[in-house]
Amino acid sequence: QQQQQQQQQQQAALRKRSARAPSRGIMTSSKDRQVGSFYERLTTYTSKHKYSKAVIVCDKILKAEEAPAKLRQVLRAKCVLLIWQGKTDAALALAEEHQFIYERAYCLYKNKQTDEALQQLSALPDQGTTLAVRHLKAQLLYRLGKYDDACEIYESILAQ
Image (cartoon, rainbow, N blue to C red):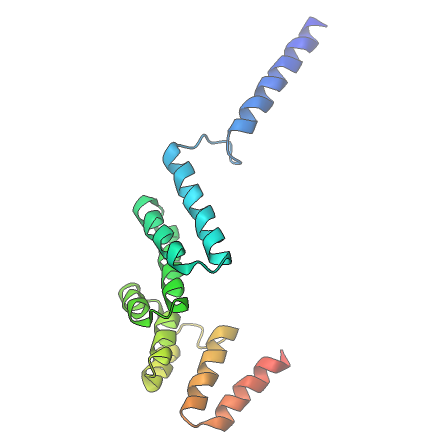
């Protein structure tokens, strides 16, 4: 009976420690919690269409985040947020600096640099297999007066 009580106490202590630790069983620092809080705010502001606040949070994450892959994702998110705000010049500069091909093409499209945008899309590794790329390409072709080519892309999108 005493052994059973000890086991129960150990299990309770283990559960208590598990509840305080993050999902991977690793204790987080206050900086990690702060960065996590920034990501939560970024999600909230974006979902509420508060893009200027979301850009500010992106800047805070960029100062605090250490993982290179996450930094690139945040930079891309910032670029998209700038586009959504209509700040295509700032978004274009960011896209060029970090080689975001699709975002650069989209900014060029918004700035009515149609030929250059179409050329940029052809540089994409997947060469237009995603819906967003195909849609943008169709818009560019339509703007150039290549209605049959644009229609062909739209029909293929609708057929999916």
